[in-house]
Length: 314
Image 1 (cartoon, rainbow, N blue to C red):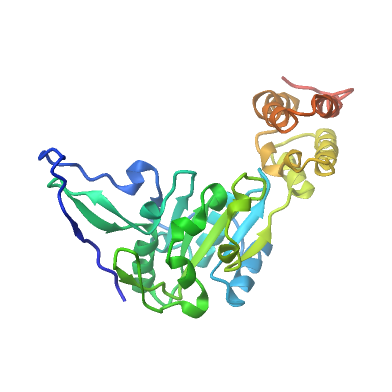
Image 2: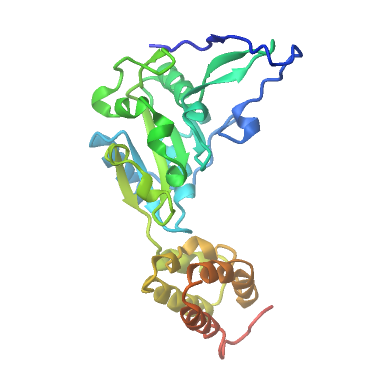
């Protein structure tokens, strides 16, 4: 079933009669549809652990999957990789959207936009457009990737569609507040990322969450070591950074348990020092702003990485 694509809205007498340029969602930064020629880039294999978990959760009947974890655990990267595999690397069957605090129903489901005559027309947005895409490609899977799910109120953004995301209600027609009739196809998959320590996490509706399976994306010392080795870091430096990283994961404050992806730029002691000066220092100062002694202790633990280290580079 297809929804109506445009609905006329009375022209405002207060508006100028001059033509109004339509602005796309991409131009506003509200979402991106991949249109590049060729296959989507993908660096994971069919036997990847996270990909396997996503597939099993979808087979269990969840509407989608949320990759959950702290900063720097590769959630966004993995979401793109998994999405590429689920759609056989077909760029026409996937779309990426990032939620943010001002994101609304009108940005995601449907909303009125200016027309060329100074009035307004009702236009489908990301969700309804991807429903159309999924119907076009059925039975092949299509994926809508939502980055930073908890940066806004997802229940408000999904609106009436929240109920019909559930697999038992897929293909069931329903009406939006505007009167538009639509249905969510069975082959449309939702893949989302969520930082567990964002301020908005507690506001995510339980009804929303229960429709998603969740996969924990935890900080991984082995992934950290592999990153450093592949960057050419010395064995001694790899082990010292890993020791510091393990101590972070035991920190009493969750915000200090950062992920391995923070260290993607580290190849020697010079780049490691720059990581602290340009990023980690500010993160830990904010996380420990009420505990200056705790910050001082963490900073000393960091400095211990460099004590007696051979071949230090700046």
